[in-house]
Length: 213
Length: 244
Image 1 (tube, rainbow over the protein chains, first blue to last red):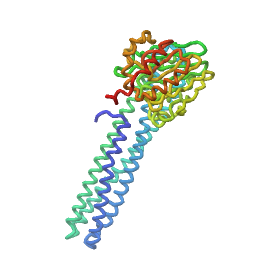
Image 2: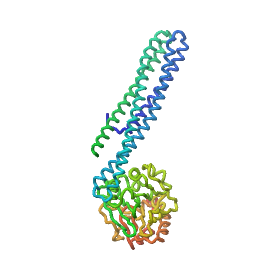
Image 3: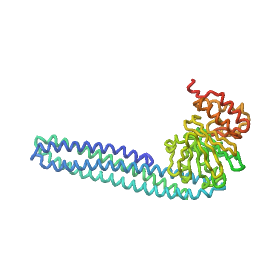
Image 4: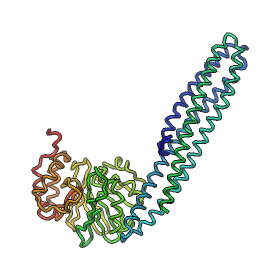
């Protein structure tokens, strides 16, 4: 994984997860289709209807989660940029204190340096809070996908009893299964991307903090 | 960064520039500090790349608390792209800048400093007894542009007017006007877009009593060289890119 700033990761992640929303939407359409077939099949696909209801609900929830992730990752990106700017200013002020130690008014910089440190700490806390929230939202999607896999397996059993509707229902089950895989992989990738960026950010922040003590 | 006292009587003017630590490829700039007692203003504070050198140099002359005001003659990055960092250093300061550029300058980062929009016909900055006049210089070169005139020190901070492109080690003052023309001719022909605006500004500036004309790039004009510059500028055709 290449090194990238937290604000880049979170912004890219929001874009990447747009695909998840699109797949979840397609899944919802497939499920509505499955529901219509199950209705037509009547008693032959009796067990299929509650499954479609569940998948429909799950895809709607996934879309909502992606929308929440979008909001949170934009906020994380904003805080990360703010923190980066504060860190940059802090570094520059420290540099000025070092190179201009003999300046007559150098001590007047102390309050600004302290103020920046406090601001930076508060932004860092906020950054961690957003990262935690994002991970939890992504975790929710992953859990939903794990449950979906089990449900899709059940739907295959139901589809096998649906006689002439079997082929159509099995195709829909395959589509939903593929959609779940895409979502799971995409979320997993985003999760690791965010984790890497945050680990790198923590190391950088700790290094800089040690350097300036 | 080199600091030169250019006036030190009733109050003080310091010019900062000729920065040897400046990254290669960016234009050298002159920043000016005007201060009296517990108040100080930085005129055209400069770009983000020179912020550290500028702040380090400033602290030899004034404390952070003394810097209460900033002035941006226009919106260019070499004038004010350091704003986001000043915003962290001077949360209670005021930035005086053309009203027309407010929405643009804020892109450099401004959350604490107060933006004081300057109306088209200019105004006055009262720096605790030092009155600095903001003289309209629109279209020279920016569509919203001001210069600073100090009637006590008789200094006109003339932004890009009078600018010259020179190597880092150049002298602070113009000594031989005629040989200086080559260093500023192309700059004015190309960067200044309007002959009408130029002549309007010359008419306004000729009415002022100016001992020193201090541009944002290059050397300062003193004494008779101020008049020589105005005469030369008056005959110069600007807006060269169009005529080509």
